[in-house]
Amino acid sequence: MARSVVGKAVRPAHYVAGEFRSVGAARFPLVNPVDGAVVGEVPEADRETVDAAVAAARAALAAWGGSSVEVRAAALRRIADGVEARFDEFVDAEVADTGKPRDLAASVDIPRAIGNFRAYADLLYGRPERAHSTAVPGWSGGTGQALNYSVRRPLGVVAIVSPWNLPLLLLTWKVAPALAAGNTVVAKPSEETPSTATLLAEVIHEVGLPVGTFNLIHGHGAGAAGEFLTAHPDVDAIAFTGESATGTAIMRVAAEHITPVSFELGGKNPAIVFADADFEQAVAGTLRSAFTHSGQICLCTERVYVERSIHADFVAELGRGARALTGYGPMISAAHRDKVLSYYRLAVEEGATVVAGGGVPAFGDERDRGFHVEPTVLTGLSQGARTVREEVFGPICHVAPFDTEDEAVALANDSPYGLAATVWTRDLSRAHRVAPRVAAGIVWVNCWNLRDLRTPFGGIKASGIGREGGEYSLDFFSEPVNICIAI
Ligand code: NAD
Ligand code: 6OD
Image (tube, rainbow, N blue to C red; front, side, top):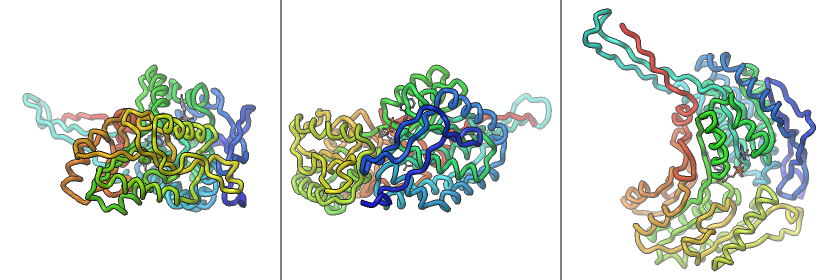
């Protein structure tokens, strides 16, 4: 396999106070998960570098936070244009870091990153400002009226910590609204995927925001750059996407300074397939929702509940579809591959029937040195099995039967998580009845991962705190201040 197929790494660097810094003793290797090759090295930010980034963001706040909506919206559009102008470079870097199929990076990750900046540039103009006329009985001066109006001010210095699965998409999903609302940013992408974040810093540098408005640091999480940043006393808010357990750790340190948090966390997402669904559409949709990006999307389906009358046929067809999948990418790392394989073994120990996959594919080329696992379909487990309860974050789904609508909803809701769910039915009344009863932040009916950036996005229970998307992100990244004028 030519190395161009596995992308082209960039040289990751911190971006602090308007300067790129890749000096420093501590570095760690960047590994391409497609073939396990070391493609570069990443600088690890020490406490001093994190402090410098936060200080730079603080110093830039007056200039950026005080700039007009027009100035900020225009800057966001120039960032979007800048990413678009270097589209292929971004795709190459995303593929090199994640090993994801090139068409996925080119059709989802990079266009959505561009879209995130454009969407928030548009949304800024649409923000309503509230005013209330207040009668003040007994007020002797003026008109006996007061005018209350509220303005939104930025929170200040925002820490953004993001994961490896959709690196640029998820980083920009927070950077764009944070900047739009007038905050300054210190961002830390996952240690596994530093490259597109570095390219983004280059684009922002060229656009020329006030020095220190956007800062980027690389490094690990616990006990390292991520924790130095989220525990920093001069950080005013934390927006985090990643594992629920990491959310717990961040919340602990955030509690020290009562720092507000927005969390997008893990999931164990259910799909409910009713017998009246379009069978082929439901199978194809579930193949997509379970196996896109080899199951490494927080929205992916890992639990499928199918009405008993079609359960056997559905399992057979889903298994056939999973076995026929080709061209899928690897797990992000050897450690994550080992975790996913440990669940494949656990499922068997728990009594699962393996319908498809369950092991490591053999390609007969460089990919055999990479971190691939087979798309896996299971059945036969009880609802209490760990494989059915715990997030695997790989290409695995378990298919169980149900008999009634109430039972389907109860099974779907029987989870510590509540991020996303999918319902497959041709009965519109049933869709309306079932969707709001499913305990998840996002419910798709006869589709999956169909996104409108204005809609609320987030999870309930262990899947998150708060909502992002559209107005919801702008609300998190700013706070209203009420001004009352006697007139
Ligand atoms: P992770 O929690 O291990 O890491 C995410 C980020 O947090 C990384 O940048 C990491 O360095 C940093 N980090 C880790 N420990 C930290 C600490 N103690 N303090 C500060 N920072 C720390 O997650 P991951 O493995 O990169 O991503 C996969 C997980 O993310 C899955 O659980 C998935 O469901 C979840 N996810 C959720 C969403 C969503 O929108 N709900 C989106 C994508 C991924
Ligand atoms: O589409 C989005 O806006 C979004 N936040 C997707 C998250 C996917 C999780 O892996």
